[in-house]
Image (cartoon, rainbow, N blue to C red; front, side, top):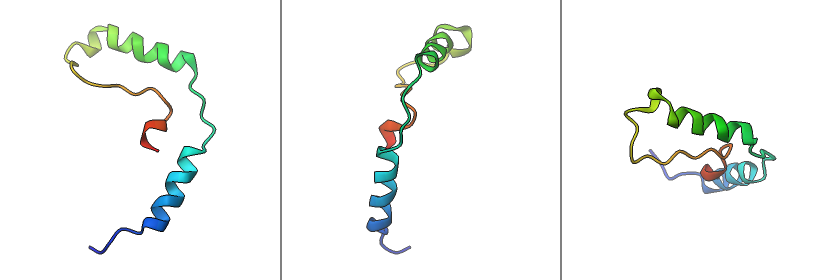
Length: 57
């Protein structure tokens, strides 16, 4: 495995960061409803980012 291609990484990051992906309040409500449901009974101490992928940029 060689060195990572930092130029390609920079371009990818720039494209992700400028992606017009506003977060719909309905998506946040769905995440809240899931976390409040019995389906999330075993989830604890986790951070759930509902941001359309912005935190990965």
